[in-house]
Amino acid sequence: MNWIYFVDLFGTAVFAISGVLTAMHKKFDLVGTLIIGFVTAIGGGTLRDILIGRFPVGWLEDRNYFFAILAGYLITYFFEQQIIKLRKSMFLFDTIGIGLFTILGIQIALEQGLSTESCLLMGVISACFGGVIRDVLTNEIPLIFRREIYATACLLGGIVYLLLVEFSTNENLNILVAIATVIIIRYLSIRYKWSLNFNQ
Image (tube, rainbow, N blue to C red; front, side, top):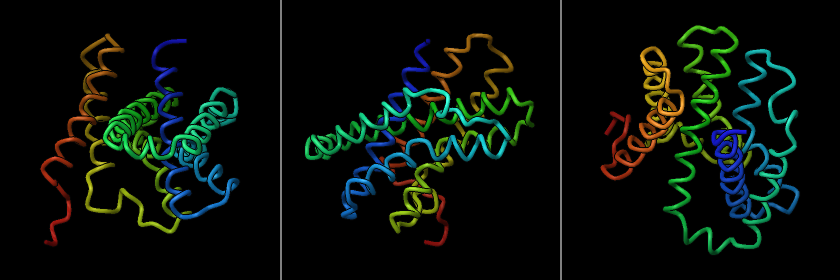
């Protein structure tokens, strides 16, 4: 196991926390919050694997993803107020998560021999569509359809990663730079209220 695997599990737990918090805010019951946490955490990767015909989907072969989601679920229920107070930290963890999930999605698509543009698309789907499913199920406008720059950060981070792969054999460095790109773009977009909405 390498550090990417552990960060992947950590990101899965963070995404589960995001889903559970949303469901709790919407007054879902215990089962409902678990379901929302689950689909938030693994929805994007599942959709990616289905689209590229990768079976069984990744999380079905590794029970650690179940444990990560369950941990996120329990942590949210027992420490809800503390987590809410750590919103800025959660923003950082969430951003690291979407950055890593983007890169992992691209890597899996590359292994399948897909075109560059398809790999980018699979990366964005991996990172963002768990949140889309969460928002649809909780009757919210999906985050990627709002003014906030989210999927665009993943897309640009993915482009940086693919460019680095062409010129560098240091895979760890390539991943870290790509994730840093996502974090910086997300931070700057929030800090300076950047938006792709031109109808203002």
